[in-house]
Image 1: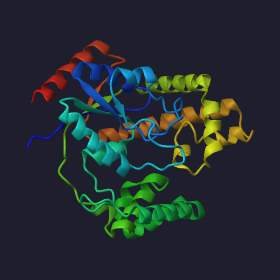
Image 2 (image 1 turned 120 degrees about the horizontal axis):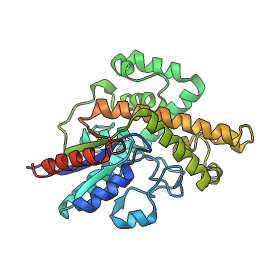
Image 3 (image 1 turned 180 degrees about the vertical axis):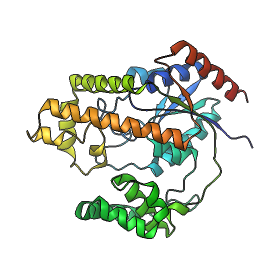
Image 4 (image 1 turned 30 degrees about the vertical axis):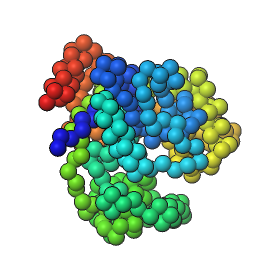
Length: 314
């Protein structure tokens, strides 16, 4: 049985993924599934660089504005929803296009990670929520090094690949171990379920950082401070929605403990660091086809179209 074709558009923030996805979706009869962990939240529009209503009207978009900011949304939730959408979109004869920079979301889907489930059976969500809350509380009480050391004692192979200060990955590894009774490093490798083409956008780092800084400045001008203030009126800083870059930096400013300029600079710094991590992740986790549509727009777009044509007709 032929695997469904799935196009994934990845790359660091501010490199032009949304614009390219709209152009390719219209050209290839595609439908777009957001792979961004923050665009699922309603009302968080500016800080997530969410596509506009007019842009969403051009082609179908999914997994945008589906959660309240008080809700948690995981890679498992994304995987289940995206799998169903791929079936539906493919059945219509259209091309599913995953767009976003959240690497774990894409990996969970394209590599069919177990994520704590047992085959097709979902994990005990109540128990999972309890474990997750306990681990988050332990991180707050004991600190990053203590939780990483706990992981190193039970699963040294996993700890060797996860930095001690990477809260999300350390807690996720401990959660899977406690939930499944299996080492995180020993999670079964499954056959990749889709015929996926991973298209990566890149550019020279100085230009990327310039674009990131400019985007943050434009977000602030467009009303990001008010959007962040609204968010923190709804939820506390431990809510998942409040931990995203572009939002987590605002509480000191809102408490009048930091200036606007300092807050903007912190968002720019965090965004640049995140972009660097994104590039590393996509280079190491996927057989990514890279294109620079900023420095070489004509040549690389021709290469991109040629490569996609070969893949689609294979």
